[in-house]
Length: 103
View 1 (tube, helix red, strand yellow):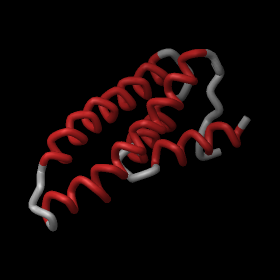
View 2 (view 1 turned 60 degrees about the horizontal axis):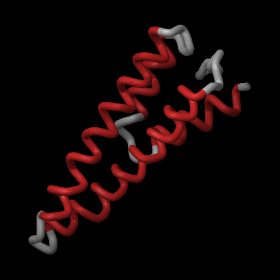
View 3 (view 1 turned 30 degrees about the vertical axis):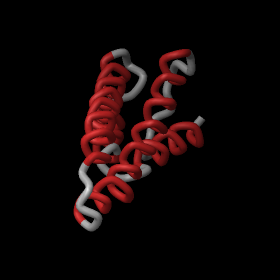
């Protein structure tokens, strides 16, 4: 199948899911609120606030994907697909839903 179900559904999976949701919220906030406020409204304060938060969450999500691959939770193919979906708004939620639906 396209995604492999994780072997462990413990605290690390909860942290992964929470990070994915937070990263999705930060991406949508950045793309659809902060950036229009900067380029249309001329006020870049929201980009200065939301941008670093989004960057931190994005890096954290990628690190958690990498750790999941290293620990054997996912194979390399699944981890790479998760990383590619992290670039798309709501991609981490889609990735998480596909993992849950596999089990």
